[in-house]
Amino acid sequence: MKRTTKILLALVVLLIIARLLLPYFVLRYVNKTLADMGGYTGHVEDIDIQLIRGAYQIDDLRVRKINGNIKEPFVFIPKTDLSVEWKSLFRGRLVSEVECYNPELNFAFSDNEASNQTGAEVDWTAFLKKLLPISINRFAVIDGTINLTSLITQPRADLSLKKFQGEIRNIRNVEDKDKKLPSPVVASGDVPGYGGSMAFSANMNLLKVVPDFDYNLRFSDLQLVKINPLAREYANLDFEQGTMSVYSEMAMLDSKLNGYLKPLTKGMKIFKINEHEGRSVGKFFTELVAQAGTAVLKNQKHDQVATRIPLNGTVEEIKTAIWPTIFGVLRNAYIEAFKGEFDNTITLQDAVKDFKDDYKAKRAERKAEKKEKREERKAERKAKREARKREKAR
Image (cartoon, rainbow, N blue to C red; front, side, top):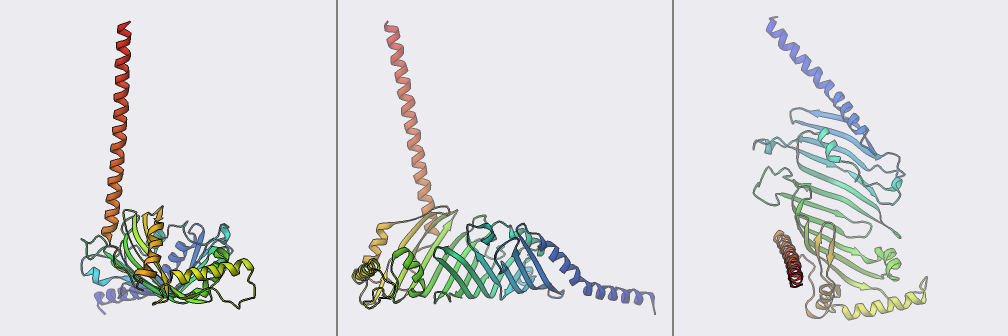
């Protein structure tokens, strides 16, 4: 056997051995990286390397809170696929894509630190970069579950999304570089605790510290009877029947927000004359008045009560306008019924306009302050001149 052939065979054997040992070393590296994430720790059961695809798969990823009282892990992903995004590679950009199958996220909200599990105290992007040093350009979730526990603590109200599907594309802006919002986002899921479903679509700029976005969000056919624990606590009434859908559009630029919420109820019934169990006299009259108000403010033809709540402000403070909200109720009842759809009236330009108006208002305020200071200095100089004249006159 020639020397060259022996060398080639040796290289092939070494490559095979390296390929067999590579998953073991990668698994050790990943588990070492996940072992200490501040208040959280993680573990992976197995890793499969696919060199031809430029990918590796993580099996049974679990991340849990250290010293927490919550049994469920913060994150559980049975299968995660991390790979090179080939279509971007052909454009000369080395970026990656991640797909998570049947993931489960468990958020818990509490004033007690041991019972609070939101992950807000950890920089997850830093650990993600260690696991996948190539920048992520596409992220997808297939058949996921998101549990929000104790979203409202008194009375306790949880919110879960099942069959969650989501995708974010062009995160690193490989395509459409001239667009202000280059990253399309879509998400959908069922809301089993309240009936109905959720749908979300947006365009975003995720390369900013505070992302810019323009979104549409819809919750459809939520069952009013499902929110009775909250209605009893905060309004001293409960619903007998009916559904509610919520439509929202929002645009944000440079932390300035502009948008609306449009809640719309169908077939809402509050008062039931022969309800005796657990109903006090006060609750009887509260429900009676509420039902009478509903009858007055309801669009009779469509059997709906609705309004449009304008929202604007900043990330730190969102403001609502009372009178347009009240007028919206009256408009739906007596002028024109709101439609169960998006108004399509909010764009990124609305946030730009709001930002410009705010800038103009601040500039006018600064001019007024400068003018006031000039008047004060002028008055001081005048007073000094008059004082000097009096001294000379003496």
